[in-house]
Image 1 (cartoon, rainbow, N blue to C red):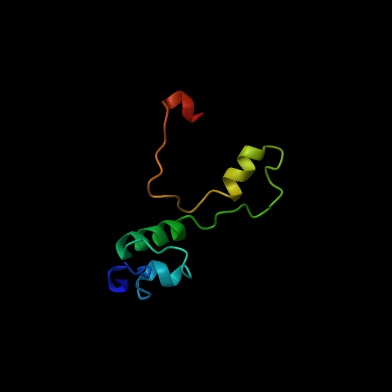
Image 2 (cartoon, rainbow, N blue to C red):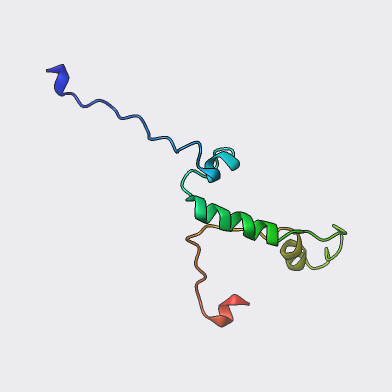
Length: 88
């Protein structure tokens, strides 16, 4: 019978009142409020995240990217692998 056919379930939408979801314009939908507050504090503490002179350090690409594009925060599941020699 048709009544026994399982109906597709609608995806559960994140709570729009959750700060991470609303403040990231929907990008983050799985970050608890306490963790979101810590991520925002880390981003604030990193400012400014660029050199005043964008051409400073261009002769050393690694230094330039480190000083201009260092992420304010990264995946919370990120782990560094390798020993001290691998960290360079």
